[in-house]
Length: 272
Image (cartoon, helix red, strand yellow):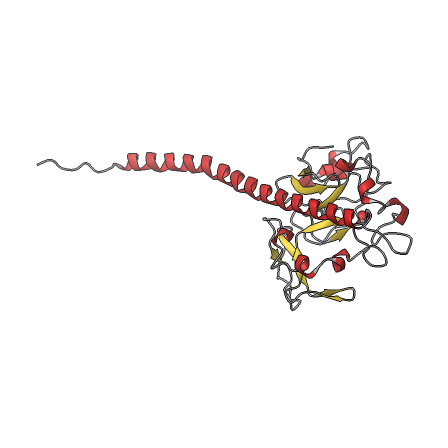
């Protein structure tokens, strides 16, 4: 009678080694595929918002939103259905869907760039929907109209160098409109460095709150010409945020930036 032959220890070790090698090959590929799917969904959201803003400008003589006295809180001018994050899922980058703060104002004990900004139930004189508003994207605050005052909120840029007729923007393909970020309105400046800590949430300036590594060296963006694409983190410094934004500033190749000027986590990203 024939006896069944069992695996020897060496044969088992060989099988385990082969499986380990296959896993080492497959896991990174699966991660890349997953990230590619998230980026594709994020860019679809950006395309949606680009069309949304263009329709808004077309219906309002080239004006996007006025915001408050210094150009902030543009979300107050949205319809309730567009505000409500339960109804409008396009508020979220697929990598950042969990709000850092709930409706009662309780914050997560720890949070980072992969969180959405907190749920707002009201702001600057307006009560929002029963579910409030939250998200993980930002509008370029310089494209908002300013009803009064001399500069934009958190910026030294004057009213005449932002806003204007959205439909008449020059070189619109290089003007950021809507992007991944940690706040719903920002006014970046060319001399503002990224956060020192790659995972930092809300510890940097306005440029640092959109220069965040959500998509492996990129953020997703909608541009003023209606296009949507991924934007390199250092490329953010060569986009034309406002009429006087220096695209040859201190964090650009044209401005002579050195590797040491960048925080360590971003140094390996391509320069622009």
